Image (cartoon, rainbow, N blue to C red):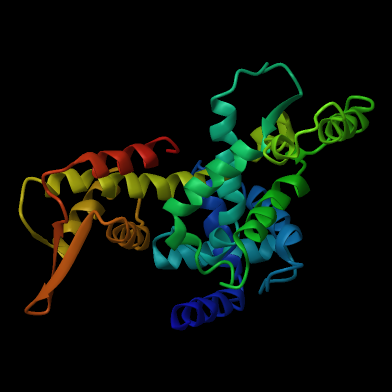
Length: 320
């Protein structure tokens, strides 16, 4: 109960944190505009896009002339000398990013016509991948939803983002496709030839198929980088676990420093994500720790068995 209360408090604090213009511009420069030679009007246009999408459900603390607001935000970054990687504006997109990442991981395994306007994906496979990614990154998203919200409601919320963006739909543009699908469902569930109620009860559920608008999916693919970047941090951290096999123990600060150095070589600066990766490794029973003279010491729970480490690395790598 105390854990749920803490999570609820974290959610309420996060939900009531106003999204400033610098938060949104930081997200745009990190994930949407990679070039350093960008136009002010392009940033302002993307600020306007974010504002229209999220102002109904989030506290956006900027109104007025977006050109002037964007210019002012750029001056703030200029004074700071850096652009922060993480912000509230990124966090509000995490569920959508997870679902988009799941969608493209399913599509990558499919053979579909690149010249086609649409393709179909299985809802079961889509949600299965979403759950796997969400489980790996649970400490990145645990504050986004209150603990009283069910997992299925969270999944629906993430799916709704893709449906609202016209990336997914439950009907194709083909005539009578909806009626044909309904007819198949009715025929399947009303099989009068079967008298065995037990067989009927154990029939597999018909999988819902989503229609993917490929053009819209590709135009929104940038949002997957929010998840991909964090997964990359977890992958780097997980690979460092193999280095732990060469030594008995290591100070946690030293271990995190090694991860940080590797991330900086890759152009990342995600110390919070590295800390969350450590929580995952402990919860998965891979590493343990103890304190000695106020210093936290890490060690592998089973240094002679690398199966779990390699399994975790593979699980992360399949979505990177």
